[in-house]
Length: 388
Image (cartoon, rainbow, N blue to C red):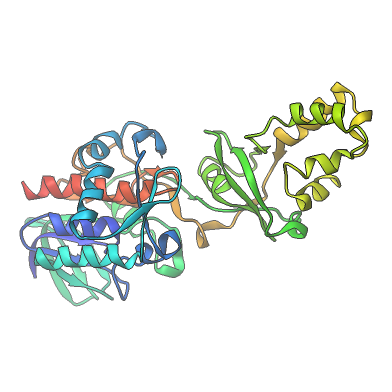
């Protein structure tokens, strides 16, 4: 079995790359169906890109690495492709674009593109004995048939969601050819607390500004039986390291200090907790009153006491015990180090003809369609080079 290009991994990046690489292309995956992470993404509607996507929304040891690929195949390019295939979509919030009907529309589009390109798709197929050869690379499919390919693209992703078949295959191949691996951690993942301190308010959500040694994210936060979740928490988790505290600013769009002082003048008999419950969920205020001193009536509060309360609510420091891990992490932080990968082509400089794309690389996007855009952009960077 001889091919011009073999793409290993039939996820978003792998399918996109295989469809555009030209020549005789093999696409291999051990799953029963291609694009399984696409299917479950965005609540089944696939947040396929973000209107505001740029390199600042990505985490990497080399913060400049993603710039070239993102600039040469943009979110507008992928939107045009979606429109070309007649897939209806909408913006949900913060530039996040979703399919109107189903994530399966994106999978169907990619499958049509594979078919049109004559790609040879092999599912439920394992790759063994990967090696360099005089003609490029060789490997065995399911331990029997031998494949020879001039180019090989590794698009097997990271470690997130192992129940869907995620493995460290990309890292093993990278190490085989001398590439370093930037330490990997679960990212876009809920935090856990060993004492389950928020079990009594599980299900409560509120706006919050959350920081963990990185940018501050203003989005919803959700209290769970195990800890904290919601978009603001997931975003911050990508910047979090074990043992590090996070900082939560409750009601970030409200000047709580001014609100308390105004109400002190107009309704001093009102309890502090009653007024706070106008700006925060009542169950959360009840919970916080067991952790902080929120007693007393507004009229009895000094400016200094109000400042102390506001400090506690807007600089609430918590140290998670951990995260829910790769089991629920949407992506993997870290991956194949970019030191010896071309930012323009995704090709290894240590093993010409070998490419790494998508989540396998040390490039991690924010929540909201950024990681899909990296899949499309990195895939096109490799495919365009291969096709020339």
